[in-house]
Length: 151
Image (cartoon, rainbow, N blue to C red; front, side, top):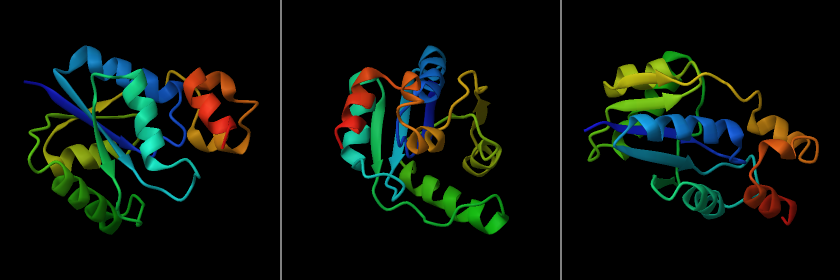
């Protein structure tokens, strides 16, 4: 059985994330999405999980309420992050890691799974959307945009 996972803040969940999940769901028997808590947005973790669950009812959501705060591509940061992921997925026999980022190779290496890098077909990132919601609303599902606009 092929079991994939991806991670992120999904703040907000955008068309690039949708493309990644669409790709994963075509290839995997089961898909997990780990949504990490973050201070980069006022949108609660539960609301971000709700968006994904409504748009992708077949994915399994995991709430990352206390993810590590240390980020980076240096070995120490990578080890902290991948140890966290090993703990989160210790009872789930994942086989593939989905991302569009360089860190995918480290996650795959340290969790002994296949690095499934999905190209960035949609030229957007959540930071850009947070900086100018109106200019970038075309990259959001109506459900997500409505929720953010009302916060």
